Amino acid sequence: MAKSSRPDRKKNDRRSDRKREPSEYEDVTLSIDRVTRVVKGGRRMRFRAVVVLGNKKGKVGLGTGKAAEVQTSIQKAQRDAKRHMIIVPMNGSTIPHEVNVKHKAAKLRLMPASKGTGIIAGGPLRVVLDLAGVKDALAKRFGTGNKLVNAQAAMMALSMLRGSRAAVAADSAPASIAGAASVAAKSAADLGIHIPEGPNLPIKEVKMNDADRKQMGEGPRG
Image (cartoon, rainbow, N blue to C red):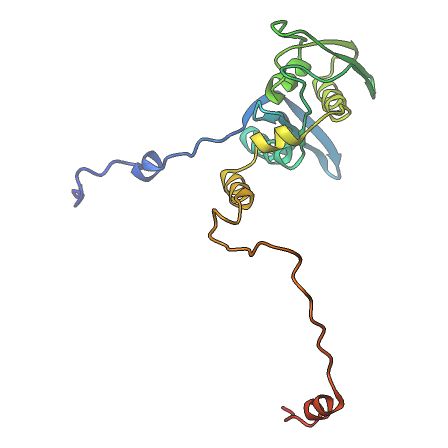
């Protein structure tokens, strides 16, 4: 057996040395179901994953993905959740007002709660509220126990909330956008731009006479 020219080299060292960047979003897999589709010649079996993604600062998304492998379906669901993120308006640590939603066979009721109450909810609704950053809320589920339908109803309820979304967008804005906003907010004196003070500057109107028009018309043509 030939010896390696690099004895300190380990197997798959490239993967071990590769550091994964921490993501600002947290994800929870609600369910993984095996679904089948009847096609010509038999049945086609795949896996469907339902994933909730959020940063616990007012942004949350729900996504589904189907694939022949479980891991691939989860990755598809994560990408789908990122594409369907919504901003949840907040009133401190709770929601601004009460919401009643009916979606398919699911009925949900969300109510604001005082500070320190916690999330009084169960199932997918609790996961969605937690990843959205809601710390105090009361919720009740009526109807079906299907996780996907209840999660969709929870997202619909959060999208129906009315309130200020500016603070949530500012907290979740990338550092580059925040830096650009801070530069734009600086005054002209901080940027070294001198603006003359005094009354309104006079505006002089310049008119073109016939000689100038003739000279411009007889200029060289390219």
